[in-house]
Length: 79
Image (cartoon, rainbow, N blue to C red):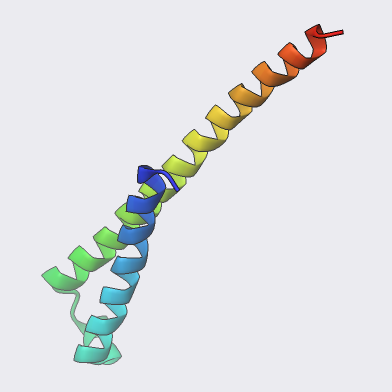
């Protein structure tokens, strides 16, 4: 994995794990009743990690497509 996917995956998974741990700490009813600063931060962390992961995957797919198009053109030119 390249750096973008690694960072995105760590932020995404870390945010989910921390949010679940915090939810167990307070109890799920408390999280639903009061959205405090820590909960908002953890949800934001999870969403940022997810966005970074998606953007990184899209960028990698585009670069792979460009490489594949170049390789196919070179192969077709050879007898």
